[in-house]
Image (cartoon, rainbow, N blue to C red; front, side, top):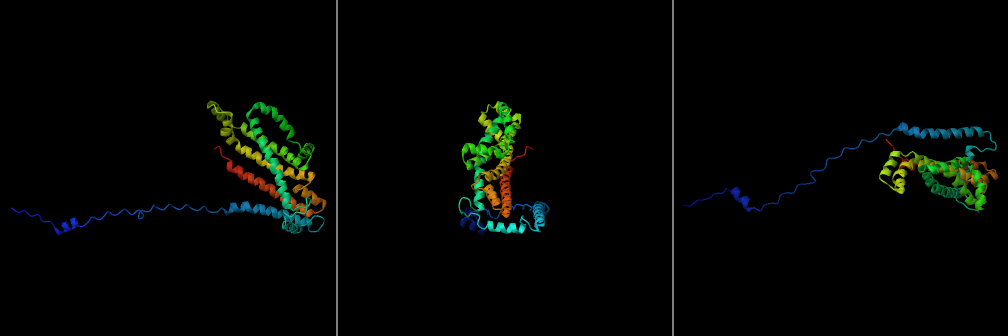
Length: 300
């Protein structure tokens, strides 16, 4: 008995042909869903103009009043005359024709150098002293009366002491900046340390942290906003002091330059110097305010 097995042509063809590899899934076809676009914040034009317009109007009012008061002439220059003198002055701010005749750029740089040295030395001494006064009650009771006694002393009263000790005008001016700009940093740092919550210090006592770790891990971050406020006040004081000190010590610097122009009866340059001193002081304060804002925090 012969048995026959019949296969349909379709089945045979499927067996004989090589099996094609399975197609890989197409990754590109399944693209990630597009993220919704963040809605663009509309520009608050009212807030923008409230920031820009009032200062411009205030400056225009000052110039307008100045122009009205000087329109009949006299010894006081008009705004136009002062502007023309400023254009000529800043055309070459770094000329040098000897030690007593240098451009206003050199005078500003020399003043900034003295402020930097005096202010830096005050920070090196004043900030650690503020930590000590705020941390230890004994030190606070010992030093606070001295600070209250010396802080109101006029900056120019310290200048003869500097001239007597250092026998030179430049270090005497730096000394005057140092002694006048140290107090805001000492007082603000000490107040910041005293306002640190007692719970923080209790935790440090329980954990038996060393004094160095208490200062660096607990006190310094909490005190930083107070410290930066003191630094900002100090740099303003330093810039005020240097102008007065350089008027008396001579040499080179924006204060000496103002006094020299007064001796030459060049009132236009004196007015220009007043604007320059104000702009540089404002720039220094704004720079430190940006730093303080960067490191400030909310207790909420």
